[in-house]
Image (cartoon, rainbow, N blue to C red; front, side):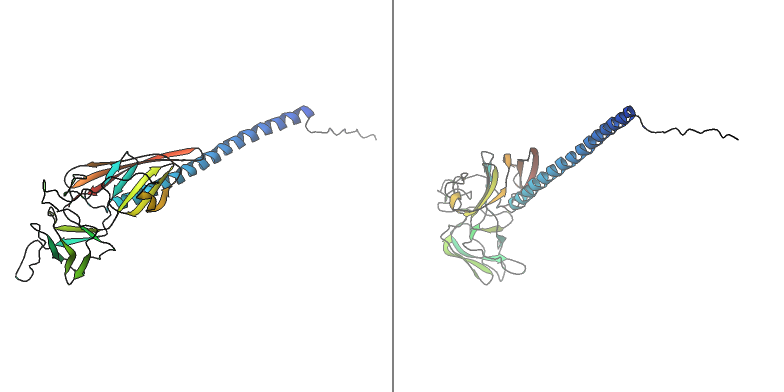
Length: 286
């Protein structure tokens, strides 16, 4: 008996099919890598922008916190790129009215060298080289009535009077009183009977791609803005923010009790740029 011969047919890809498959696989791989690559690049860009935003926001928050501790009406801005203030180191209330026991009020009608402090617990800390401010006004730089002006000339307030004690006058504590080494007449009383203890001025200056903080220099009649010139050149300084491509500072008095500081910062790094705007409400109650 003869058995039929069975021929096995070889199955597989032809060369043309193989080339097509390889081509399609390459196209899919390119598309996939492009999609994934764009997603990764987008994530990297987003992360870089987030890092820049966090850096600028941290600087703004620090500036805002310091400006809120300024002596009322001591914030001033020049050219939109320099902001200055006199920091409050400590504060308290002076005795305004007498009673059967306490009679040492702060005298505004003549020079005084001692007054009683109204403090619930302990007296305020007297900072090194402390100066006292009472009744500062918004009349920037006007003699006798503003912290940046000279002593009163007798036109607006008594001659020789001022809202801040002279740098040569030493403050000391005696019991529940603050004493002056030399008598001083304050020009104006505080509505809230407040006094502020200060010693020097502080600035933020935006220049040459950085925002730099300067502190520990004497209070000046004219706001200093040049970090390379006195008094800023000899002041303690630290860079707050780098890669700054733009900044704008501003101050506006809203009413007799409040002011508004605007801070705008633009920073750029590795082709990414962010701009942040911050508004600070400051209290102006002398």
